[in-house]
Amino acid sequence: MTRYADFYRHSIDNRDAFWGEQAALIEWNTPPQQICDYSNPPFAKWFVGGTTNLCHNAVDRHLKTRADQPALVAISTETDTERSYSFAELHAEVQRMAATLQGLGVKKGDRVLIYMPMIAEAAFAMLACVRIGALHSVVFGGFASGSLASRIEDAEPVAVVSADAGSRGGKVVPYKPLLDEAIALSAHKPAAVLMVNRGLAPMDWQAGRDHDWASLREQHLNASVPCEWVESTHPSYTLYTSGTTGKPKGVQRDTGGYTVALAASMKHIFDAQAGQTYFATSDIGWVVGHSYIIYGPLIAGMTTIMYEGLPTRPDAGVWWSIVEKYKVTHMFSAPTAVRVLKKQDPSWLKKYDVSSLKALWLAGEPLDEPTAQWISDALAVPIIDNYWQTETGWPILTLANGVEQQTTRFGSPGKAMYGYAVKIVDESTGEELTGPNQKGVVGIEGPLPPGCMQTVWRDDARFVNTYWKSIPGRLLYSTFDWGIRDADGYHFILGRTDDVINVAGHRLGTREIEESIASHPNIAEVAVVGVADQLKGQVAMAFAVAKDASGLDSDAARLKLEGEVMKQVDHQLGAVARPSRVYFVNVLPKTRSGKLLRRALHAVAERRDPGDLTTMDDPAALQQVKDLVG
Ligand code: ATP
Ligand code: MG
Image (cartoon, rainbow, N blue to C red; front, side):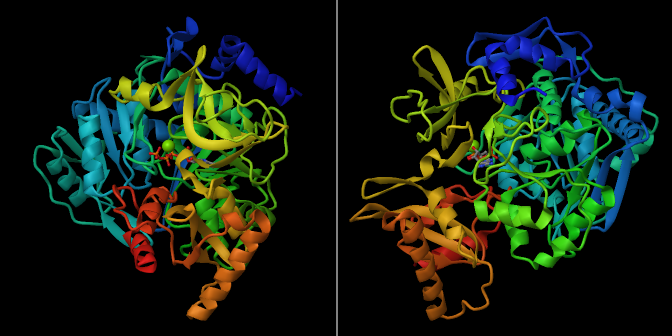
């Protein structure tokens, strides 16, 4: 067995040899001539001269060996449906969609915007795009017309694929009116709109522009659309970051590097075997959905599960019932979802047989220790934190258990993944901090490994200026996250670079204070922001969701819990970290992807305008904060 430390060193010291070996994990039409062209930093070109196709590697490649195995299972607890497609059936559906898109005028290099709920047709559309060399740009279904319009303007799609409606918690969310409004708002007008009609909501039809998927599919039942062999560097898609810290950035990804990176991650990080089952509870609107609902598992020849619905409906056991029924081996979710489950009756976790599970991977935001411990006790499988970004496409920090089994340390997403030259750097001088437990910005020395962003869509200057800093002799990509690395190479993410607060000269990560508060038995979730204070510069202010709020209906009860929380912070971190107030709220303001909208919370806590809220989930959450701080 290889030691991970050696594997990692090889990837950094012998970059081209390492990635040349990984390139053999996928099928090429023409093999690459050069592994990495970094002659124009920070732009990296991977597997230059090679031609391949993402859809070929995700679908066609498996027809020889596993045509009849389920490839995609689309489960909806909103419409009470389950649809399963074998690789052969998926192949047929993708070709029908590809032929339909071609019929609507979509060609290689064109963009197709996908604004869809979590239904199988969304996967067909993504795969169909990359099959013909078109770029998809998936926009989270349910984003309002303003957010959608700005993405239509940026991507300038030839066609849009959408559906009549999504559904959330049993409530139908009509998409077509939002889409029509967005197109009206946008300066760019797509030539064609392809609608999947689920029969959930009525639709206004614009003749000449709008087309019905069911009838076009009928016309293409026997379609045969070969994969377009594209250059490795041909873009496969664009996707926006979550917008947690500001205006979302349009990430552009290549084809060959991404396919290799995902194939390698399935092997080394997920230790996945063809025939196993992967269930990522994310949404195709986010990067996890791209890499680990659609492409990664399919490239690995696994069955992938797409789920439309809430984790708590019809009851809090629904995910575990899916694990039992489909013998899920790999599960991927987010800390925010686990915290939702944590508020439910714990007996739901014991109702189903989850012994097929090998591990649960969690990503997207800091995984606090109490939450990790809770789900670990409940499931009795390894809980593996992993840290990455839309920009990188696959984990930067986690454990590569396919290379060497290593133990999780709660609170740490783990070690630097192969290919990533992770550096902790001093924020002001840019100098590398090489000692253990030194706080700095998490950076990656260029080139970024395969699979990471090529550039910001149509804005090379923004890519260079936003992410890259010169430090003597080299270029460093900034993650804008703050972290430390311990003596054993385990990293700890302390928050975003703008989340550090300064209380009377002490620099404190909001994350540390949140961890401390969350370890109180009656706290389910908490957010801490630094608010301006005349005396101390800044003070911490906490907004917490109680696990059991039933006893919190009087001021006295709230004050009592607030006092307990403060005492706990005093005890664990010291009085300097003690929040000036702990407010109890029903929900925290979050993005649609479930991330804390700290920027907005911070603004409201300081009685400022919260700014761009287009990616916010529930406006009522911010209103309650406003009311509390007065
Ligand atoms: P934007 O860049 O538009 O502000 P965003 O950073 O939230 O939005 P994403 O790319 O979805 O968009 O999220 C990546 C960020 O999420 C990371 O930079 C980090 O701050 C946080 N994150 C992701 N995974 C983890 C993790 N395992 N532990 C701690 N933080 C994480
Ligand atoms: Mg970001």
